[in-house]
Image (cartoon, rainbow, N blue to C red):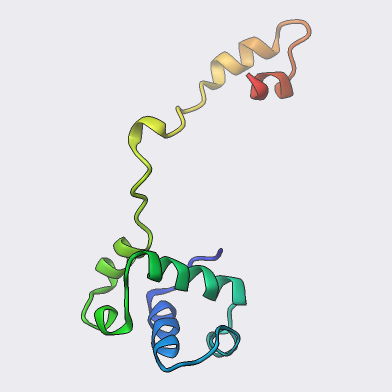
Length: 102
């Protein structure tokens, strides 16, 4: 799902509040219908209505829609140690595919 500008997200919410279909919203905002569906789903999960979105700043709206509550720092990927990868690749029988699998 492409990430829309806050102006377009507000327009999606406004048009949905006005009773427009997702297909009409997608056509009006010039994005794919899947993008509209995804953003409306995010808004529903965040319990976000058009009335509430009108009073929020762009930063607050973005934080609400794109927050990752289940993600924490411990589950983030460790940075790649390229010197270790290079030394492992110099060994016989070791391929990049094998290293990625490990």
